[in-house]
Amino acid sequence: MNNTIIFTSALGKMLLVKHIFEMKKTVNLFAALAVLSVLLTSCGGEAGGELVGASDRPSWNGINPYGMVYVPSGTLTIGASDQEVFSTYTQAPKSISIQGFFMDDTEITNNEYRQFVQYVRDSIAHTIMGDYTTDNYGNEILDWDLELDYADETLDEMFYSGDMMINNKREMDTRNFVYNYDWVDSKRAAHSGYDVVRSSLIEKDEVAIFPDTMAWIRDFSYSYNEPMTRNYFWHPAFDDYPVVGVNWKQAKAFCHWRTKLWNEGKGDEPNTEQFRLPTESEWEYAARGGRDLAPYPWGGYYIRNAKGCLLANFKPGRGNYPEDGGFYTVRADAYFANDYGLYNMAGNVAEWTETAYHPNAYAAVHDLNPDLKYDAQDEDHISLKRKVIRGGSWKDIAYYCQTGTRHWEYQDTSKSYIGFRCALTFLGRSMNDF
Image (cartoon, rainbow, N blue to C red; front, side, top):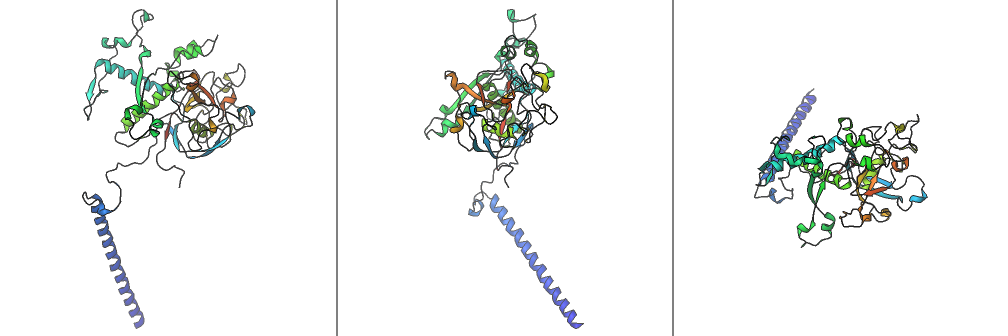
């Protein structure tokens, strides 16, 4: 009994000593954290001589752009996904790696592109009206808070007049909707010396951005498509259909404007990446949906499912356009998405990429984020103005819908069957890296 009491008393003293010791450790820890906090926030001492990084950095939690899906980093084998002797030169198989990026889940729609058109229209009107204000840096900028009245006679120069009018209807001259922008030629900058003049690296362009609605008539000889010319970009029935009649330069201008729109809307949130057209390799990687060597985005070797239903909007047979459910284009989110959540990566409209076309490009490009880039000038030979288009369209046969099929169009040419979607490089570690 006495031994038990002695043992209990001793155990109590040990626990008390342990408790006191842990309290001291806690107090010391709080004291150390307080000292460290003072050191980190002090100005002159610079964290007590320790390398802890600059303390005035903005926070960054990543982004998730509306209407875009994430395509994770990975590898794939680009090129034809089936035996094809005639394409061994232009589509030779090659293993590559792609950095993660965001991509629009659908092609850019008429209504989304119309937002761009209205921005350019309103900027012209504000300029004519003299609606300017001054920003925090003393720069003169347009005052977008002022309302516009397009019935104002001051804006008459934006409309057709005289013998240009039809039935005296007041209509805007959309040929004057021009977007001006500039960018840095990073390729040239990378190969220039330190003494290069920065202004020599800045490229400028002005682009008439209104879609070429006449492409519906011009693309098909002896064919009645005037209703599409009159209605496709204008009528609300086609708001959610992919925009067409947009050339490569117009698509690039849209990406620049979208970046500007994003940055203005996000305020001080740091984002140095820009919306852009996907590279040819990014497009193919995204189209495959993680199914390497699959000929179609849904993974199968056939254009129909087990029930015989067509899986994309294309031309199933000679003279047979509507069998797949679409006479011309269909809604941008029609059919099932691939495993990355991307719609119509086969058919509907072919899509512009950032990449310049060369038949044997796969033999020259790197296996790390490959891309062949060339900004052709107006005076360049026409062969240098070819840009890669991918995916096939509503008027193409199934071959052009395959994920590995390469095709091209001239950068200054607009067609009723070519549209585009945007990409945005993912910043930081890839989401599939652990």
